[in-house]
Image (cartoon, rainbow, N blue to C red; front, top):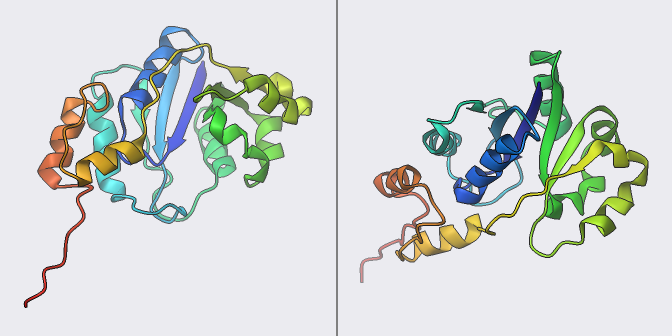
Length: 200
Protein backbone atom coordinates (compact mmCIF):
# COMPACT_ATOMS: atom_id res chain seq x y z
CA UNK A 1 0.00 0.00 0.00
CA UNK A 2 1.12 3.56 -0.74
CA UNK A 3 0.47 6.03 2.08
CA UNK A 4 0.65 9.78 1.55
CA UNK A 5 1.59 11.91 4.55
CA UNK A 6 0.05 15.34 4.09
CA UNK A 7 1.63 17.84 6.46
CA UNK A 8 0.83 21.50 6.91
CA UNK A 9 -0.57 24.10 9.27
CA UNK A 10 -4.13 23.73 7.85
CA UNK A 11 -5.00 27.12 9.28
CA UNK A 12 -7.78 26.64 8.26
CA UNK A 13 -8.08 23.49 6.14
CA UNK A 14 -9.76 24.42 2.87
CA UNK A 15 -11.11 22.86 -0.31
CA UNK A 16 -7.76 22.72 -2.08
CA UNK A 17 -6.44 20.57 0.77
CA UNK A 18 -9.50 18.39 0.31
CA UNK A 19 -9.22 18.26 -3.50
CA UNK A 20 -5.55 17.26 -3.33
CA UNK A 21 -6.45 14.20 -1.25
CA UNK A 22 -9.39 13.20 -3.45
CA UNK A 23 -7.39 13.57 -6.67
CA UNK A 24 -4.39 11.64 -5.38
CA UNK A 25 -6.64 8.79 -4.26
CA UNK A 26 -8.78 8.72 -7.40
CA UNK A 27 -5.72 8.74 -9.67
CA UNK A 28 -4.07 5.99 -7.57
CA UNK A 29 -0.96 7.94 -6.65
CA UNK A 30 -1.57 6.68 -3.12
CA UNK A 31 -4.03 4.31 -1.43
CA UNK A 32 -4.37 6.17 1.86
CA UNK A 33 -3.77 9.74 3.00
CA UNK A 34 -2.98 10.92 6.51
CA UNK A 35 -3.27 14.62 7.27
CA UNK A 36 -0.70 15.67 9.88
CA UNK A 37 -1.32 19.22 11.15
CA UNK A 38 1.78 20.85 12.59
CA UNK A 39 1.92 21.63 16.28
CA UNK A 40 1.89 25.07 17.87
CA UNK A 41 5.65 24.94 18.53
CA UNK A 42 6.32 25.21 14.80
CA UNK A 43 7.62 28.63 13.76
CA UNK A 44 4.36 29.85 12.29
CA UNK A 45 2.42 32.92 13.37
CA UNK A 46 -1.30 33.21 14.03
CA UNK A 47 -1.95 29.47 14.31
CA UNK A 48 -5.27 28.56 15.84
CA UNK A 49 -5.09 25.87 18.53
CA UNK A 50 -4.00 22.33 17.80
CA UNK A 51 -7.45 21.12 18.83
CA UNK A 52 -9.35 23.48 16.52
CA UNK A 53 -7.23 22.72 13.44
CA UNK A 54 -7.44 18.99 14.15
CA UNK A 55 -11.22 19.21 14.63
CA UNK A 56 -11.68 21.16 11.38
CA UNK A 57 -9.70 18.57 9.43
CA UNK A 58 -11.79 15.77 10.96
CA UNK A 59 -14.99 17.56 9.94
CA UNK A 60 -13.70 18.11 6.40
CA UNK A 61 -12.86 14.44 5.75
CA UNK A 62 -15.22 12.62 8.10
CA UNK A 63 -17.03 10.70 5.34
CA UNK A 64 -14.03 9.81 3.18
CA UNK A 65 -12.63 6.30 3.39
CA UNK A 66 -8.85 5.91 3.40
CA UNK A 67 -8.29 9.40 4.79
CA UNK A 68 -7.15 9.90 8.38
CA UNK A 69 -6.07 12.80 10.58
CA UNK A 70 -3.15 12.39 13.00
CA UNK A 71 -2.15 14.50 16.00
CA UNK A 72 1.41 13.10 15.98
CA UNK A 73 3.07 16.53 15.64
CA UNK A 74 1.26 18.00 18.65
CA UNK A 75 3.38 18.35 21.77
CA UNK A 76 7.16 18.34 21.28
CA UNK A 77 8.52 19.93 18.09
CA UNK A 78 8.72 17.36 15.28
CA UNK A 79 10.66 17.64 12.04
CA UNK A 80 9.36 16.11 8.82
CA UNK A 81 11.94 13.31 8.81
CA UNK A 82 10.79 12.31 12.32
CA UNK A 83 7.15 12.29 11.23
CA UNK A 84 7.95 10.10 8.22
CA UNK A 85 9.98 7.73 10.39
CA UNK A 86 7.04 7.45 12.80
CA UNK A 87 4.63 6.43 10.06
CA UNK A 88 7.20 4.08 8.54
CA UNK A 89 7.40 2.29 11.90
CA UNK A 90 3.61 2.25 12.15
CA UNK A 91 3.18 0.89 8.61
CA UNK A 92 6.43 -1.08 8.04
CA UNK A 93 5.14 -2.97 5.01
CA UNK A 94 3.83 0.08 3.16
CA UNK A 95 5.48 2.71 0.98
CA UNK A 96 5.53 6.17 2.56
CA UNK A 97 5.16 9.31 0.43
CA UNK A 98 5.40 12.91 1.63
CA UNK A 99 2.91 15.19 -0.13
CA UNK A 100 4.67 18.44 -0.93
CA UNK A 101 3.76 21.58 -2.86
CA UNK A 102 6.21 22.71 -5.52
CA UNK A 103 6.56 25.96 -3.55
CA UNK A 104 7.99 23.94 -0.65
CA UNK A 105 10.23 21.94 -2.95
CA UNK A 106 12.01 25.16 -3.91
CA UNK A 107 13.48 25.39 -0.42
CA UNK A 108 13.52 21.69 0.43
CA UNK A 109 17.33 21.73 0.68
CA UNK A 110 16.96 23.90 3.81
CA UNK A 111 14.81 21.32 5.61
CA UNK A 112 16.26 19.30 8.47
CA UNK A 113 17.92 16.12 7.08
CA UNK A 114 16.43 16.67 3.62
CA UNK A 115 18.88 14.23 2.00
CA UNK A 116 17.81 11.55 4.46
CA UNK A 117 14.17 12.16 3.49
CA UNK A 118 14.95 11.95 -0.24
CA UNK A 119 17.02 8.80 0.24
CA UNK A 120 14.44 6.94 2.31
CA UNK A 121 11.05 8.23 1.21
CA UNK A 122 9.30 9.56 -1.89
CA UNK A 123 8.02 13.05 -2.45
CA UNK A 124 4.67 13.43 -4.15
CA UNK A 125 4.82 16.95 -5.55
CA UNK A 126 1.78 19.12 -6.27
CA UNK A 127 2.34 21.97 -8.72
CA UNK A 128 1.53 25.38 -7.26
CA UNK A 129 0.87 28.53 -9.25
CA UNK A 130 3.20 28.86 -12.25
CA UNK A 131 6.15 27.00 -10.78
CA UNK A 132 8.53 25.44 -13.29
CA UNK A 133 8.56 21.88 -11.96
CA UNK A 134 11.39 20.62 -14.20
CA UNK A 135 13.64 23.48 -13.16
CA UNK A 136 12.94 22.86 -9.47
CA UNK A 137 13.54 19.11 -9.69
CA UNK A 138 16.83 19.65 -11.50
CA UNK A 139 18.16 20.93 -8.20
CA UNK A 140 17.73 17.41 -6.82
CA UNK A 141 19.14 15.34 -9.71
CA UNK A 142 20.63 12.72 -7.41
CA UNK A 143 17.21 11.99 -5.89
CA UNK A 144 15.12 12.35 -9.04
CA UNK A 145 13.79 8.78 -8.85
CA UNK A 146 12.23 9.51 -5.48
CA UNK A 147 10.30 12.57 -6.67
CA UNK A 148 6.88 11.99 -8.25
CA UNK A 149 4.98 14.82 -9.92
CA UNK A 150 1.21 14.51 -9.47
CA UNK A 151 -0.68 15.31 -12.66
CA UNK A 152 -3.67 17.04 -11.10
CA UNK A 153 -5.32 20.41 -11.72
CA UNK A 154 -6.36 22.46 -8.72
CA UNK A 155 -7.89 25.80 -7.92
CA UNK A 156 -5.30 27.77 -6.01
CA UNK A 157 -6.78 28.63 -2.60
CA UNK A 158 -4.92 30.47 0.12
CA UNK A 159 -5.44 30.02 3.85
CA UNK A 160 -4.09 33.55 4.28
CA UNK A 161 -6.82 34.93 1.99
CA UNK A 162 -9.50 33.02 3.91
CA UNK A 163 -8.22 34.34 7.25
CA UNK A 164 -8.25 37.89 5.89
CA UNK A 165 -11.84 37.54 4.71
CA UNK A 166 -12.94 36.07 8.03
CA UNK A 167 -11.20 38.81 10.00
CA UNK A 168 -12.96 41.45 7.90
CA UNK A 169 -16.31 39.72 8.34
CA UNK A 170 -16.68 39.19 4.60
CA UNK A 171 -18.41 36.29 2.84
CA UNK A 172 -16.32 33.20 2.09
CA UNK A 173 -16.86 31.92 -1.48
CA UNK A 174 -18.39 28.43 -1.65
CA UNK A 175 -15.34 27.06 -3.46
CA UNK A 176 -13.01 27.87 -0.57
CA UNK A 177 -14.32 26.17 2.57
CA UNK A 178 -16.30 23.07 3.43
CA UNK A 179 -19.59 24.18 4.98
CA UNK A 180 -18.96 22.15 8.16
CA UNK A 181 -15.57 23.79 8.56
CA UNK A 182 -17.08 27.24 7.99
CA UNK A 183 -19.83 26.56 10.54
CA UNK A 184 -17.22 25.44 13.06
CA UNK A 185 -15.11 28.57 12.47
CA UNK A 186 -18.14 30.79 12.93
CA UNK A 187 -19.35 28.97 16.04
CA UNK A 188 -15.93 29.29 17.69
CA UNK A 189 -15.28 32.79 16.28
CA UNK A 190 -11.90 31.75 14.94
CA UNK A 191 -9.65 34.07 12.93
CA UNK A 192 -11.35 37.18 14.28
CA UNK A 193 -9.01 39.63 15.97
CA UNK A 194 -10.31 40.92 19.24
CA UNK A 195 -10.16 44.73 19.33
CA UNK A 196 -9.21 46.05 22.73
CA UNK A 197 -11.74 48.54 24.05
CA UNK A 198 -10.43 51.50 25.98
CA UNK A 199 -12.50 53.71 28.21
CA UNK A 200 -12.42 57.35 27.18
